Image (spheres, rainbow, N blue to C red):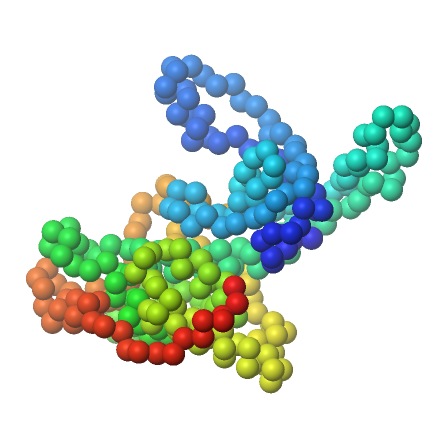
Length: 310
């Protein structure tokens, strides 16, 4: 089975996997100690009674992490083969239990690749939004930090407005073929606005519950609830939504591996906010001033549903 959608309350599950040695850390040790660290095989582990899972959205530790009583585990790659797994049994560990018949404790663990792809797509969506909000404008250095950060701009826009501004026109694509065709997967965002809102609330102090971006996510959640009542297929996740394609496209936009790690060998930079900078020359022209005013303007008043569940 995949990780449960609820982050907590699954301490009766057992997670099977292999610990992989961190090649970056091995390199650091070799440089620090001037010694060669011997190559070692990965270690098979069974995580018993995991406490919860969470998503770390920091730049260097981005990905899904699982907490047990003893350690944190970074979910890098789900199992892709059928395996026979031995379920740990507390009864067999009791003194005096000599029952060697373990057939009742043996189970077939199916491939996790297809089951995990939905989590992978959700992680990719969050990655795109974090990168979009956290990017620094190219004018930031030239103006000595006077240009607003992009979170200051997007907080006054709804998710749909941000999406519309960052989708390039055909002329934009002709002038700059490296632009992203879209900043994030809006179709997926419509399915999981509450999930996204929960994580974005922790992104920046500027993203308050009253800012247009988070209010817009609350509005999207209400639309989702109403669509479910009407029995619409997209809201009930009964449509043929390609989660794998969504995940792959988001990973390409953020230039990250499926598990969230940055592709360090990829030297190219593809800013998600590039569409806003296409017509900005070296000086502070009207486009620059327009963005600056928008970022510092007071957001329009909207009614927010504070009972939005997370």
